[in-house]
Image (cartoon, rainbow, N blue to C red; front, side, top):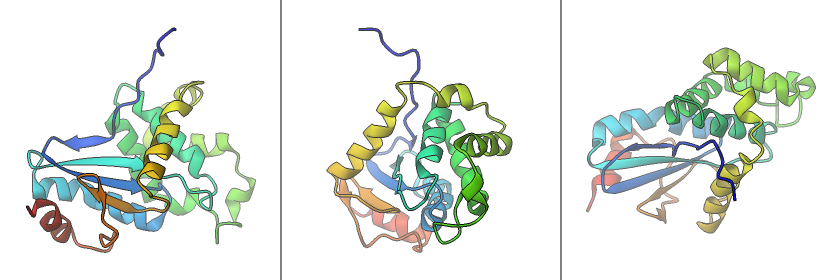
Length: 186
């Protein structure tokens, strides 16, 4: 069996013993709010004390969710690896309404194609995603994210786990200090 010539970089930052997993959908406003706190959380809690892992949680009511998730995974295969993927997440979040539908079913994106969405992401990030997006076996990594979420009973975003346990009481509306306190409790 031939091994693939690509590898998706894990979306992991920090190297501490406490693991904070954030299940995010790239165009969900609450996921964007949570994503924008992750760097501050890592700085406050300390890279040597926590590990942050982003898990992608595609949701069908966000109409281009699958295309955008594939762009993020595709970006993680590029030379910048996880930082390229993070750049896609950041730019999609910063321009969220340009990638979403009004009321999940209307607006300008009704006429957008997947190629239009990819081109828009390439424009914002400066990354060339089309070739990586077209990797035939890239769906292997996307399916892993879906399967992992389902195995843990996660169906919506954002959802958070600490050390492998879902914490339904953690919210994107919590402060970074609240998250850090929860993570660093013994």
